[in-house]
Amino acid sequence: MEAIEEQQEKKEIQVVRTPLFGRTYATNTLVAITDCDIRIELMNEKFRDEDSWVYHSDHMVILTMQAAKKLLLDLNKKISKYEEENGEIEVNSDRLNVDN
Image (cartoon, rainbow, N blue to C red; front, side):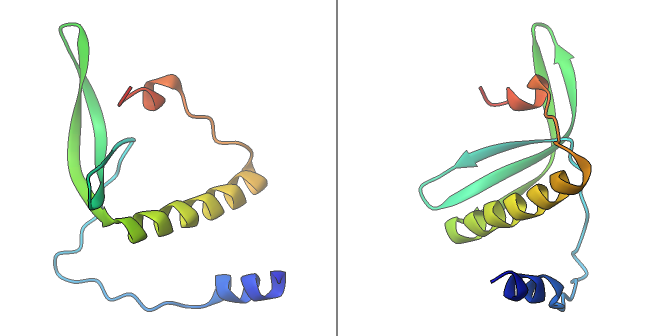
């Protein structure tokens, strides 16, 4: 079974980027769910406003339920591999409590 997974890992996938392609650097995310999709706000900065924080959202990614589930599975796999090689990624409470 591992040999198959290793072969799939090395499989090259061709991706063609359109003229609209862009990159967004995010230091935090906010995830929301609707009845038909998952929405991920990509945030980079936060500002203090009186007694609370205001988050600056640069972009939103809207995924179908299937695409969101695939993203979850892919991220779990990639992060697990990264942590095996580099140690656990610690997430501070500031990032964990954005939507609580």
